[in-house]
Every structure is written in structure tokens, then in C-alpha cells.
Amino acid sequence: MEKTRVCSLFGIEYPIIQGGMAHLSNPELVAAVSEAGGLGMLTPGGAFREESIVPDLRRDIRQVRALTKKPFGVNVGARAFAGAVEACLEAALEEGATIFMVGAAPPDRYTKRLKDAGAVVMHGVFCTRHARRAEQEGVDVVIAAGFEAGGHLSPLELSTFVLVPQVVDAVSIPVVAAGGIADARGMVAAMALGAEGIQMGTRFLATAECTAHTNYKQAILKVADTDMVVTGRRANNLARVIRNRLADKIMELEASGASVQAILDFIGPGRLKAAAAEGNTEEGSLMCGQVAGMIREIVSVKELIQSLVTGYDSIVAKLK
Figure 1 (cartoon, rainbow, N blue to C red):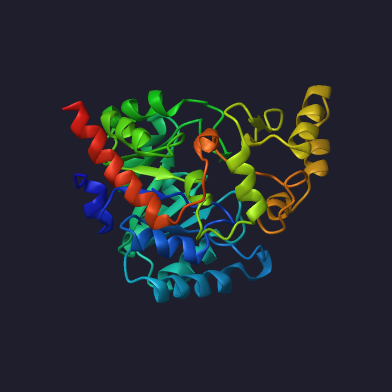
Figure 2 (cartoon, rainbow, N blue to C red):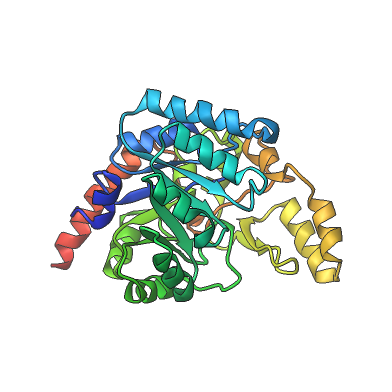
């Protein structure tokens, strides 16, 4: 597998980035990805304790460092941690973090502060306009995230196969493809579209090192290609999840014309925790991407990354 600018910027062996999944990117997973040659991304809130998010983040950064000496990054979601973004970023900088991504926030809000501190900054984009603005604000790498992805989605609904080449043509900085990638075939396709790396979330969720509840992982292994649905269209808060009782009820409320507030009141807090920490696969939110239908076994992170590398090289050799 050839080196790309992504490898050089992050100091990693392979252009493979683990998506910073809210509450699911635990230190063991992050360290394992980095140890295997990719870039692990730590997300605050893994312990589901909002009141101690900053000290928990400091503890998690130190735990990752105890497990690996290789580079890793910190991902802070402005939607998930709205009141604590700046505190999390400052704490991470004080702990020596040098690679960052801030999701669901305009690139001008935090990029300069992070760049002034000497950090490398990634930014997720959903269209060429977003990508151009990110480049103008000094972002180093853009993550072109297609609608196939899991969790919270863009209402623009551009697919990875359509989005990535247009973003590549729109900017001069490296582009990483995300959404709908789970194996070497997807990585080859992404690189053929001009991406210089890939980001995967769902596939890393279904690994031995991820501390998500076993029931959550087993639910991913059991799904078929049509078992994922998108909820939140009425509230303009789209999320792709495995269909279960919770998702059915949300869609029923949306179809009935219930108010946005009524839907939000029904969902309430703690639905991801119910799935990820407690294993409630019917009343919890089982966020995952469309690639869940391709995942049939739980493997170690090392095995997964090695399969990507060897599979990539084999496919490319056949195409020559």
C-alpha cells in the first residue's frame, strides 16, 4: 500500500483512520488502531458521564499514551458536547494532543486556535462548498463523508461515490473518504476516486477492542443490507440506525405528524448509552452505517487493518 500525504501529515503507516464515534471510541480501540499503523481517534464521553467529561478525557488521553507511543487524534463533536467543546479542546492541548477534528461546527470556529497551538486539523464535509471553506480556513485534511455512513447524517444526502471525486477536484488539501467503507474493496474504490485515505466507524465498532456492549456488536453481525433506517427527517436531525422498536416508534411518530418536540420528548436522553453500555438492542439507539450488512465477524483491530492492507495490494495488483 502506497504512502499518501495523509500518512505524512499524521505520521502513520497506513492511510486508515478510525472514525471518532461518540461514546464508542474508547482508549483500547484508539490505541489498537494506532498500534496497527492507522490513526486512532479518541472521542470524549466514553464513560457516559457528562458531568466529568473533561477530567475523563484527560484520563483517556493518558490511557491511550500508556498503550501506544504512536500518533492518535482527538475528535470532539460540537453537537454531542455543545457546552464542553472548548474545555475539551483546551484539556486535550494541555495533555499534548496534536491531531484534532471538531464535528458539526463551522471550520472558522476552532481551526485557528488549534493551528496556532501547532495541531493538525481535520474537518468533516458533506459538499464541495464545505470543503472549499475548510481549506480557506486552514484545515489540513477534509473528511468527505457520504450519506451511507452511520450515526448523524447530513441532510444534503450526497453519497460517497458522488461526493469524494467532486471534493477531490475542489480542493488541493488531502481528502479522506468516509461512509460505506468496510473492507479492501471499498478502500481501493475510495483511492480510485482520488481520496488519500479512508475513515471507518462501523467496522471498527465491530472489533474485539471496542468496548461497546456485546449485544450491540452482535446486532451488527445479524443485520441484512436493508435493516438500517434513517430517522429524524422531521426534526432535521437525521441518524442512520439498525431498525428496532425505538426506530419504529420514532418513524411512526414522524409519519403521524407529531411535533418535533413530541418526538424529542419521546426519545429523551440516554438512548445510545442504553445500546452501547447496557446492551438494550430494542429501546437503545443502534447507530451504524449501511456497511453493517457486510460485517459477519468480530475481529481484532490488527487483523482488520492487515486484511485491508493485504487485500488492497492484491486487488490493485489484479487491476494492473
